[in-house]
Image 1 (tube, rainbow, N blue to C red):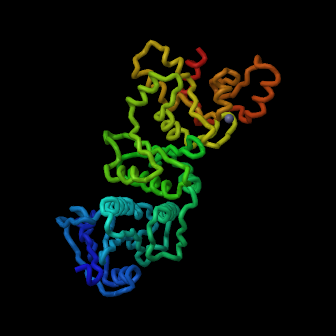
Image 2 (spheres, helix red, strand yellow; image 1 turned 90 degrees about the vertical axis):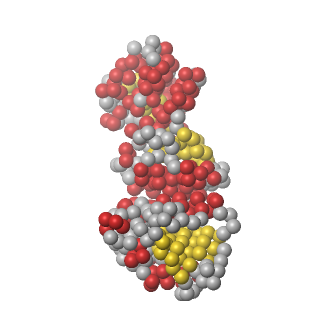
Image 3 (cartoon, protein in one colour; image 1 turned 180 degrees about the horizontal axis):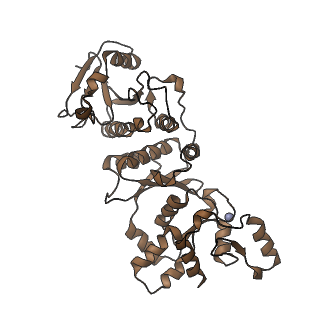
Length: 396
Ligand SMILES: [Zn+2]
């Protein structure tokens, strides 16, 4: 049938159709479908097939319409289309249906090599009026991921230029909302990004969209390690999302595994606990040296207050040692210089957060340390009773 003219296949039931009594066949009017068909195939002659929850085929799963999705089939082409809400009124949740729709499309694309397929986004008239900054950010992520916008030219949606461009825009978006982020991202070195993504609820989709877009705009020599933050009893992000990320040439998917972390702490002298790093990102925010405010992520470490070597010598259970090693209160962001200087005792921190340079280190070293240490007191965010107790353990 779809060889003679384009055919739309669309699930009628939206997630909440039963409560709202709004079904997708009422929303997608003939005029809307005609407009889309014209834009994609330059024809206004088409068929439409509205299907119920029981329906499934290569493109659609059983169940309700996840992601406000339609597909348009003609000859050897498949076009997925996802839609804005009709009156989103500037609500950020109005873009939440995009990632599940995109997931469906990418999964199809991976499994089906024969057909040419494209993913589109369509704005209902009136949906463009009150776009929030978050929505704009999402649209740019979509554009960077290869999503084609069928309309909304007036929004001038531009793809991001680089991973750094994405991260900068994201930072401006949620400056004061650290704990609520879906993911924590930093640089290990100039070409290697560490991505700690939450794996439950809407977070998993937000993490996925962000990581996918980063992968698409990455330079050739850049790579991303995606750590799944295992929480709330969930083992990992859903298999489909994981498979899509694993197919990206520059993404390495790792499950954050407590026992792996424990093993590395037990065996090696040099500690690389990704959980500690993740906890600091979540708690302290983006890397910025506590002594000099340097914010170049690749030269900043998570430094332990109570040293790992000392924790390992304690006569306590391995479980307890691990909890001290990864505790967010047992850490500071320090640049490489300050990390070494702090560990060698040339700088110490007093219980009220004052930064003290030792007298005994000699004139020339002291001058250098003074010159690079432009803070005299730690930021208030550090000074908690737990942090002070770690300082005391360090000194003893
Ligand atoms: Zn520093």
